[in-house]
Amino acid sequence: MKIAVITAMPEEFSAVYRCLEPGTAMQLARLKAFRSHACGHDVILLESGMGFDNAARATEAVIREERPDLLISVGFCGGIDPELQTGDVVVAKHMVIVAGEGVEEVPVLFSAAGQTFVARQAGTRVFSGMFASTPVIMSKTRLAGLLPAKSPFPVVEMESAAIAIIAVENRIPLLALRAVSDPAGEELGFSLDEFCDARMRIRPHRVLLTILRKPRIIPQLIRLARNSRVAAHSLTAAMEQLLPLL
Image (cartoon, rainbow, N blue to C red):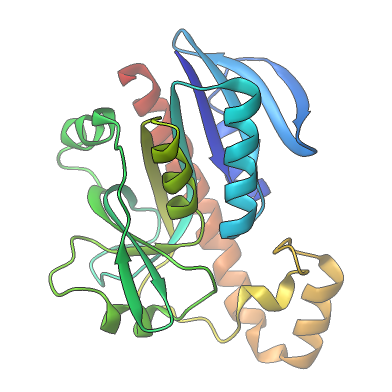
């Protein structure tokens, strides 16, 4: 089977890269990519950049050039359910887009392997949940008030819905897997878009300017960096367990 794994950020890309066999670094539609094998599958790993538009462009490109049998959206997320802890892994069972005050269900052709993976991880910090994809960065507190009551282990991220929509259009199954890098109780005092250019790519000079304007965020950045390392370790471990099931 040919599998395309789409990540948004370098840390997420590296987390998946660590569980793949030696392969070839490449570019696909000017995006960082890596061609490899894992558990008998051909794997294309891609770094799209953050946000709906980047994820959509990357998905269209990898389908056009590689025609994969399965798409996997992998990365970090924010926990909306207070039970979710840093490093917990959530596999999408439902998906919605939250824009403004509206919540729209996303039709997804989910791969059955996702829920099989969750079932086999019984007793661990791996959950089936709802992915709330947002086109802009939103606070977790606000999202919690917009989502339907009793949504199962909801998390927030910015790419999976865009990938899902294009996957459905091309009749390709999707598996979406995320690790919590900032739980519900850790609302950030800044928005990641302050660090990004118009294409939602983090730029060091914008990070520095934001820190100069808001030095109070330095402890939050240190905590987020530590949490991201924990989440990256969880992603690597989860992908190592998932790939043999595909």
